[in-house]
Length: 232
Image (tube, rainbow, N blue to C red; front, side, top):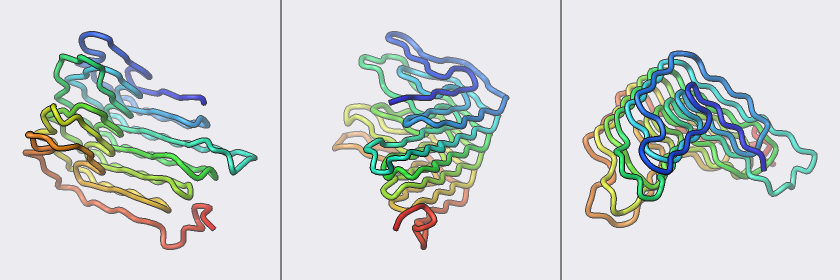
């Protein structure tokens, strides 16, 4: 399995202690065309493991995975994670620094074109995917678009976060805002939200999301004729 990491500041950033990326600004456009099974693109960083704080992106972020395979029955899963700040952000065990303060003003676009059936497309104005730990104080002003082919592909699109699952013992998301339009389309399952496309969390004393808003139009679509995506 091959991976591709692209970011306006760093492709891949991991920190065992302290903060992985802090106080960075990107004003250039970020573009990725990938032929790998797992790809990450972000205005600041493609993939990050550890805390991030005070990040701003003003450039467009566009990513496309176009994967062809002679053996269409291959069990490979083709997945793409794209965000205005980070494509995917994962929590580092014993992470102590707070994850907060993000602004994105660039349009974010993610496209998967493949004959292979399974995988994930996650796109968000701030993070495409955010796992295990929530954050606060984030604003997205750019449009968010996701378009995923594949018979059983799952598409997640959110004005702030496309897909997230967080621990029950951490505080939830706070003070998230979106002012851009959100659009997602696919042939199978599509989750679209003005703030979060899909959120998963077990029982907790804390609200999963609070003090947040959306002003942008939100559209989610499953193709009326799935044959346009290669679905018989």
